[in-house]
Length: 498
Length: 138
Image (cartoon, rainbow over all chains, first blue to last red; front, side, top):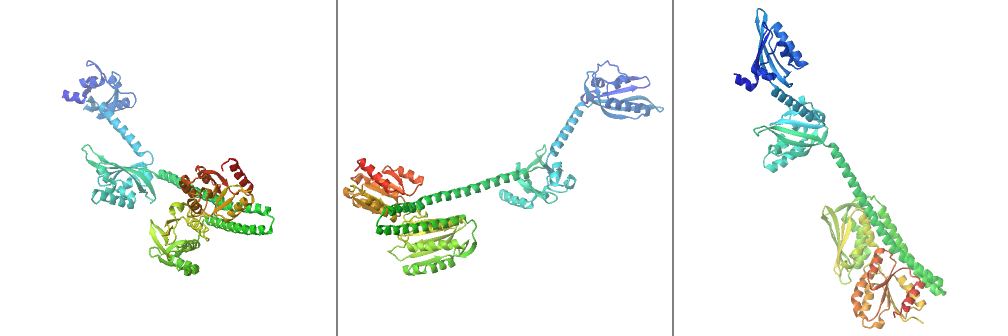
């Protein structure tokens, strides 16, 4: 008995109220850290209790016991002879004779370790609760079946449900966007080759010992939605069995919003750069055009003027005047082209219509009917793959007219002219291909200048180098592209990507 | 008395051809004037006459922008032909272009003596010819 008492640190005591004598057992003395020959009395015994609540309580319960014979069982602090604070459990019983308490007896147990452990647990719990409930972080735990077992303050704030409304009643599926769960379910089903749906979608990875962090959409009680980053892990007991699941969700609306802001800023910067680059290119090409095409007639005019001023004969003057006329006509035509170009480049909005390729070809054929009859050009077409296009009518008419009249202009004298028009779909875009069997162009030599202003490639009186330049400007302004393939003496294909 | 040179004009601009011819004639700057409307015509003439040094030009005023074969393409062909030409030929690039890209490119070709921007007035023309004569290049 004494052995067990030693292990559990339980001592005994008794107070003989008749002789006013106190007896402490060995363990009781050890708990008080007094010497084995220490002789306490009632007063000194009570004095060991810590000042304040402990002393007050023991005084009261002992008084109650003496006066009314009520037993007691209290947990209090004493200060030992060695000045240590120790938690003890004091249990007191009374012996009543003739309505009078003659003896008090009981046990005295050192519960310090127990008490400290308990305090520690409480403190840890408080801390944990503080952590769980701090900030706008939703922490939800569930049992194996998905029924919510814990719903923290953050979850209440974010999701507008109270813990009482959901604990033991709902699964976290109700706060998820159904579509997202279904889609993720399909992915997981595919991945693991089994049907995964509902709550299992959220915890499948956790069940497999992985933790998973994903972006989801949460739905508040009032139906509004917000994005969360949700981390799901399994709760595992000491036997390594899964007992439930823990989901920690962080509201990432702010992050998403700033991400979007940055993305928007980046996109608008890119767009601006594109526009600036385009304008820069236009300016550069304009400088080039001015340099090449305006300076030469002006310098001719200057030279002619010099001669005009220095010539004396009327004959010479008349001859020079003819030359003036040539230069002025040339200058006028170049200026007109530049004005046309500026118009195309400045027009940012175009009237877009649904246009039928067949109609456009017929109209072009009508306009060019004289030349077609004269050259006996054989024009064929296949617009079956793309019959219509949404485009500016003026531009498309001009593109047809320029490309077809070019083919007629540069036909080979060695063979009958054939022109074939075809539309295809390529990379989601409509392309128009106009192929002829004419003179062709040496692409290696002239490819880079093919669409330049006043660039000509044939010794041809009608070659002015304006048509292809304007055609390209128009196509460019609509966001498209024109390119050419050609072999000398075999023919040319122009490819217009709308 | 006219100068003893053959001057060659390679330019597709008819009015420029006319004014240049006129300048040369008025100031007696050449004994003969050759005029071609593009590089190909000019190089064909050179190839045909490569053996007759006396018929080849002493000075070529070469335009850059021409159809069929432009000034730079002419130069590529000329460089290949040069070893067979038994004559010193001075070549000027003459163009209305003030494009720095064209100027740099012309300067990078060692066979080109200089780059002249149009318009060239007759006084300038005379100076160029006189300077060449003074250098004793001919």
